[in-house]
Image 1 (cartoon, rainbow, N blue to C red):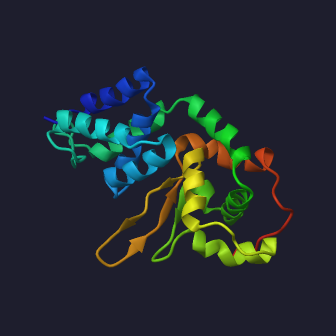
Image 2 (spheres, rainbow, N blue to C red):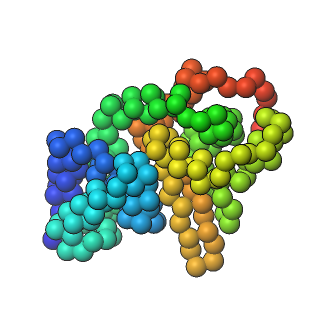
Length: 212
């Protein structure tokens, strides 16, 4: 029987252990259609190993009888993903926000510039960016060249991975039968950092057209 309290207790147990890697893994699996596949991608970049994801999968199997997140609870008939995501959001500690805050100034120059472009475009401040059939970073390469007067000398994957490692975004890219949806999602503990980025790093003085 899939019980709401048992799911919330799982999140609390990660908090008690200080297992932030498992807490993040569970959250990523809960919010994205890519499930544990996306969790493995992000956690390996963030923490250097996907072992925390395997442990979370085993915990889910122990509670739910399978290594995938089920649809609804048996006792309250609520969405399991929503229960887990909400519980994680309410549990993420302040220390994760501080770590993101401290990591931003250490980003490479090129990645800082893309952080600036995402910030000025605005959607990142409301939770993330989603494109269709093209990578998120590639949508900004022309603007990068116009604003900074040079070609981007770093791979798109390297830029996204650096942002993931810093805790600024999760790559929650997913696909349907017809389309591919590159998606960058802001972790709850990084939202405050995104909102105050101009206080952390020096941005170029430039006006960006709202339609761009």
